[in-house]
Amino acid sequence: KKKRKRAPTTIKKLNVPNTQSKERKGEYSTKCIKCGKECGSIMSLSGHLRFCDESWRCDWCKCRGDETNGKNPGPNGAATLCSACGSRFRSGHKGPILANKNGKFECACGKELDSVAALGCHRRFCDGGKWRCQWCDCTASECAGKNPGPDGKATLCQTCGARYRSGHSGPPKRIDGKYLCELCGKLLDSLVALGGHKRFCPGGSAWRCDWCNQFTEFKNRSSGPLGDNKLCISCHDDWKRFHFDAPPLIITSGQFICELC
Image 1 (cartoon, rainbow, N blue to C red):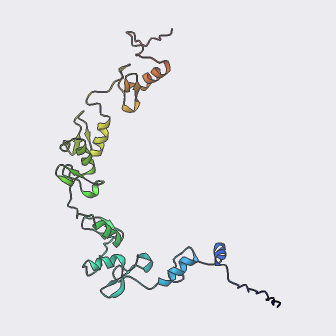
Image 2 (tube, rainbow, N blue to C red):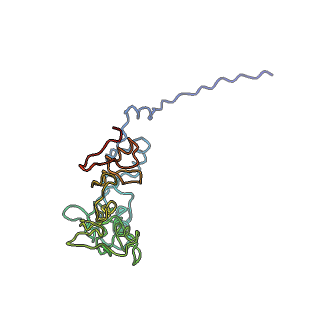
Image 3 (cartoon, rainbow, N blue to C red):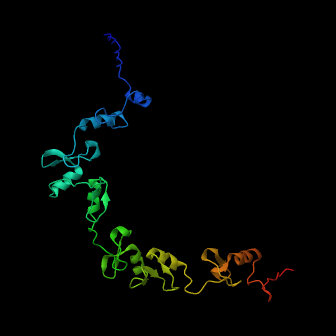
């Protein structure tokens, strides 16, 4: 028996608009009509429209829905508070934090924050302004961090902690509110300035070049045949250029003698 030939099936092309190409050309807007938020793509816009509510406001801080991570239950029912105020409500508070005259939220330590969420993150590590460094008596806001000291953890500021780790057993001496360098007797305004000064402090005696015996600042010191920071810049250039192993000869009048001529 001969098999009947089947007629070829035809697939009708659907006129589906290519949203991706039109989106690239700018024909489709990805901006939300309700709240005006720019989503960036059609997919993110459709996901945003599912939960977008232009009229929603938090009962406590009056923030919009796009300004918070989520909606939380409050004293007036479900989805009445933002994420930050909802966390505050669950911890036992009965009302919002009132902003000051500048429109910012103030902590008990005196620091001002821009939002309730920033205030909550700050209070996790805030001590209410009571903490003081045992050596320099600075507050937590005045130092970069808390370091262990001779009396336990978090008893010194970062600068005093570095001083304690280097072997010191106490704070430096202070005269008229300034810190005294124990090596040369110079007074510095802060512990940071004292630490930077001690790195290059000559120790009470002025540094002099091993060859010309001239005084110079640390930025003009250089290496020599006996090691680093032994020569001034001029003597270092002579040592490198002419390979002198000793300083040039000097006559009684103070002039240098050329060894070549």
